[in-house]
Image 1 (cartoon, rainbow, N blue to C red):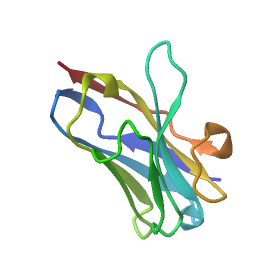
Image 2 (image 1 turned 90 degrees about the vertical axis):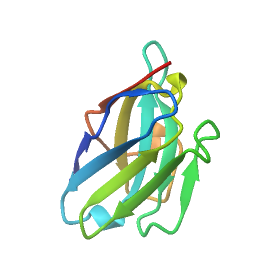
Image 3 (image 1 turned 180 degrees about the vertical axis):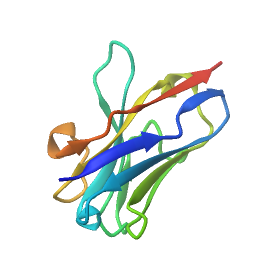
Length: 123
């Protein structure tokens, strides 16, 4: 069982930065691939970024590649999403998720989800 709690969301102007954190409980955090997803009003949840259990592999959505960076520290049971050069279209609720297997871009591959943190980017 893994419990996930996101933090770090907020209101930022376009071009600004935010760093989201996801704190995980449970002794097996280091065995899970982790992902960030987002969901804007009226839209489906979409993949943002994922990182392997050891941190050696990452993958990003094309829409955030070069602007967002996912990282993790297994000793701290934490995964981060550094978001730079934010755009109004990045506005959404951001969720972190844990997957028992390898990195994945589909929500169905993830076993545990946090409650989300709101990110709003003003133009």
